[in-house]
Image 1: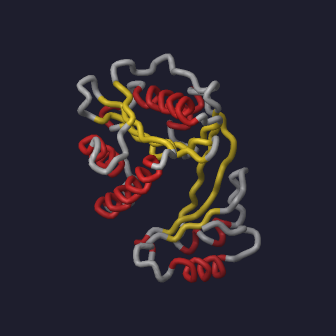
Image 2: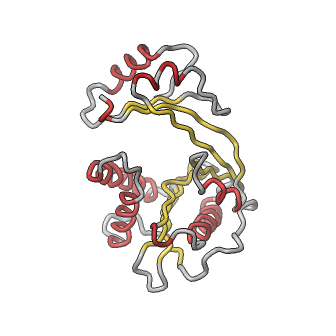
Image 3: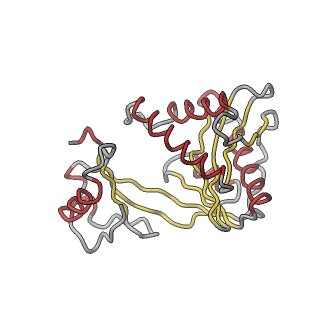
Length: 232
């Protein structure tokens, strides 16, 4: 839920959230974000952190197809595949994508709850892909059976938005993710005429530097707060 942070205090935020989502049984987290691109938290720590919320910050990066380039250490052994979004297609690989997302989750999130969330999110994305709105990509071993890295790209007009870029822990720092992101960018641009790509990263996570090394540039820092179910 996005509301101007300068105009409302936490009580009004909470009341509006309850009015919009209180009747939805699946809603357990409470998250607010404000539309600023400079990463300023303002009075968020004073207003929210003391009440059980956690500060969250995300760096948004952008690139054009021409600016995205192969990394000198990219992995040439894996094969990058575009998964078939039809309901019964590529089932084993889609199942591995789901398990990869569950394994890579923030460990604050309970496993089964996150598995259900990820499954529904993938179902929604596959519906978009069937409608021609992008694709899901995986990097698999030479035998084509093990998913080592995974990501999606949702296309809206001339813009592509990366989704859930994950690499299996055993295969990190091997140049697999860089190969996957570059190929996903170029394949999407070729098929959909995508002119700009957006990808997000935590400011303190190593993926930020990786994306910059591939040609993405920082465009904004988005701030927000989240209260987990266990926080009451």
